[in-house]
Structures are given as structure tokens and as C-alpha cells.
Amino acid sequence: MRKRSLLMALAAAPLAACGFRLRGVPQFAFHSLYVQAPAGSALARELIRTLQGGGGALTVITDPAQIPKAEVVLDLLSEQPERVAVGLSSAGQVRELQLRLRIRFRLRGQQGQEWIAETELLQQRDISYNETLALSKEGEEAMLYRNMRSDLVQQIMRRLAAAKAQ
Image (cartoon, rainbow, N blue to C red; front, side):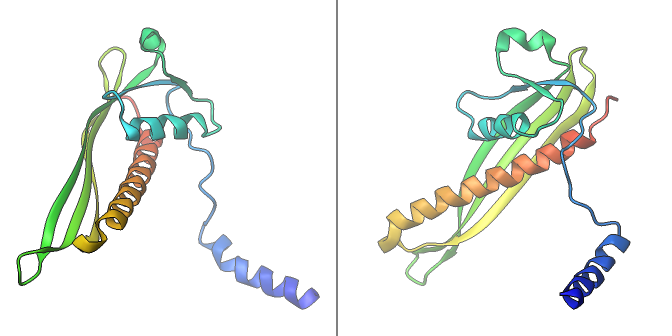
């Protein structure tokens, strides 16, 4: 038992020496935020849910009538899914697709000051395609788009945590 404890301590020592620590709850330079997004935006829903569940001191305002109470406004300017054929068979049938999710956003204060300039983020995934398996491939595409949305939400969260008024 004592050997095991010693081995675990020795294994953890390099991690402590390099400055490794868990990310923890993000700290924002603002206290209230409103997410302005196109109606029905899945990315906006996931972002709001992530911000509300973050456990920090941030207040996420969801009522448009309360926008003046928000210290900053996150404008989700566009959310554009793309599906591009990148590989064809000798018969001209699609064999490989590239799925892309491109978003543009900015963060601004109530007085118009820019916290984060207009920024474009892109996630992409490759997927094989077979028309005989079209239904299962549709499900796989939906899952890949969900994963890309989650990755983009995490990128936005990191950028919000690093944002400062300019």
C-alpha cells in the first residue's frame, strides 16, 4: 500500500512541476451578458446553457426587454452550416464530404465599446458517404454538427474569459 502511494506521488510530481492545474470556473471581466442571436439558433441555446451552468458570478439575461441591464452584449452575427463534396468515385458519385460550421460574433458594451472585434470561427469534419447508407449518415452528420457546436461554444467561452474592454 505504501509503495502504491509513493508511486502515485512520483507520477504526479512532473504535473505539479510544470504548472498544470484544472481549468476551473471561468472568470469574466463583466457581470451581466445578453446573447443576441437569430431565432432558433442551436449554438446560442447551448452557449446560454453553458454560461448559466458555469457556476460563476455571471448573470445571463434572456429577456430582450432587459437588454439595458446587460453590461455586455454578445452578438451572434451568423451561424452557417456547410456541406461540401470533397471526394468522388470514378462514376462521379460522392464518396467523401466535409462538414463545416462557420460562425461570426462580436462582444460589445452598452456604450458601443468593443470588447471582442467581429470574429469568425470555423469547425470542420470529414465524413465518408455512401448513398445506400443515407439514413445512418444523416444521423452521423447531425452528431458531428452537435460536436462542432460544442467545440465552438468552448472556444467562445475561452474568448469571453479573456475579453477586456477596449
